[in-house]
Amino acid sequence: MARERSSASIVAALIIGVAVVVGALLIRSSLERTSREIAAVEEALREIEFAGGVPTRAPTRTARPDPNRRYSVDTAGSPSRGNPDAKLAIVEFSDFQCPFCSRVTPTLEQIEREYGDDVRIVFKHLPLSMHPQAPAAHAAAEAAHRQGKFWEMHDLIFADQKNMSPERYVEYAKRIGLDVERFEKDVASQEVKRKVESDVAEAARLGVMSTPGFFVNGRYLRGAQPFSAFKVLIDEELGRS
Image 1 (tube, helix red, strand yellow):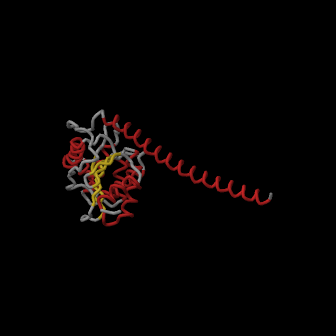
Image 2 (cartoon, rainbow, N blue to C red):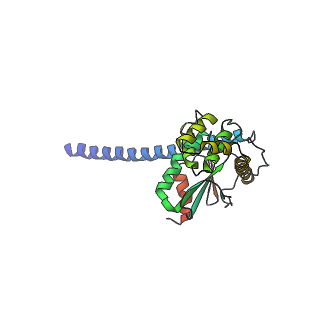
Image 3 (cartoon, one colour):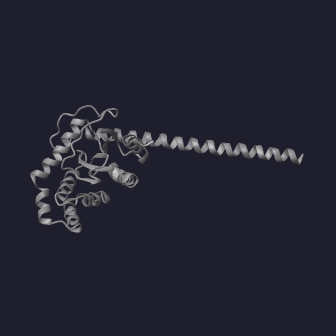
């Protein structure tokens, strides 16, 4: 009798163990599916936002980029970090007032840590019309780029999206050691304005209708995707198994 109870206990324990494992797998699958669905909803909302146009003259947009194609993106003169001779470039079209752009920043940092000199990150301006504070932020970041401090300004703006103003950008310029007089002239310059407009026009030609939008060695990836989504493309491009 005792032996039968022992056997029953073992069987019960095995059943419980299997149930726990299966339950964990189902929960993980559900969470991953939910994450993808949330990302899709966020992307749809951002596309609605873009529909109002851009703060500069908006050229005619093409269809959204095809993720199965490889696109050529002009990175000349754009801020970048990482190995300039890296095997792979991730080009980001971003909006400083977009919360999703801020959210994906840690993911890009994780990519840099994981892949080191194999990856270069490039920033492209795409201020959206529904973000009234964005144009001034992009002008400030581009002006800082003229003095070699784009990423410092980039990080400060994203760190406090609730307090975006030209006065705050002057404070940031002082904090990161810029020539403030030159910074203020550059912010108001036609050269900086044309650079931002050029990036916006290129985004429209490529069909990038929301932010953030990425090109991984020319292959399009939209939205604030998790590290795992980038990893798939990066490993394919680098020939990793």
